[in-house]
Image (cartoon, rainbow, N blue to C red):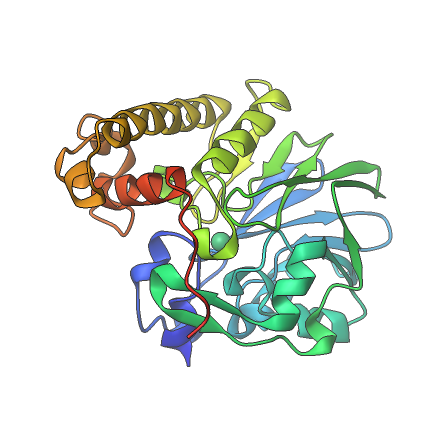
Length: 304
Ligand SMILES: [Zn+2]
């Protein structure tokens, strides 16, 4: 079960199997103004401590729910009142039910609720995410944007269409100057993953990064799926890399190259040292294939 769920997470973790969640430790980092980052291994969470309770962004996998609650309790004894799910990958909503049982109201994009309710098939990993039980579903959903005023902080929920998925929410903590990127920037400094079987796209990911840049100054912390927050300079560099990849793959398509020929041309060769240095899932070949398919308007196969 743990292995199956591990394979449902978002980025470089996707390729890993057999994660023993009982051994994973959560690292808590104070980002200032009452906002804290919880790092574990993909699907990282943020929380905000207000006067009357805690607002939590993303609930990881079910196995991590008790650890997340414990990590929050070490910072604040206040109850978790609100949960925001950034997108419907299984390492972002897995402990929703536990949080709802504790009294939290769950918030997410309209399409996130729909995908959780129906269940999903992730073609890139041949993985099925089963339908979520009603108690795990968001009870508050929105279409384009929503603002939550919580503990003196202004929390902006901004939908970016067809980015990492079709149901992403960027969560901006205005006072703390922190943005949760909902998987639209790569964890561990890598290329971002856009999940085309969940409605994600290259263009939408570029647009999401542009949106975050428009909301950032040089002090903004951008939270990816895993690892330390990225800087605005990192975000700008990621956007530039994606724009470069798009132009180069488009050129190969215009020249009539097949997908295999485009990959063989190694259009990301000079970028891989920075963006794919660790031999993880998102290699230069994989980002090239994803870009090719996204530009060509790839339609994900139906659930098997
Ligand atoms: Zn994801």
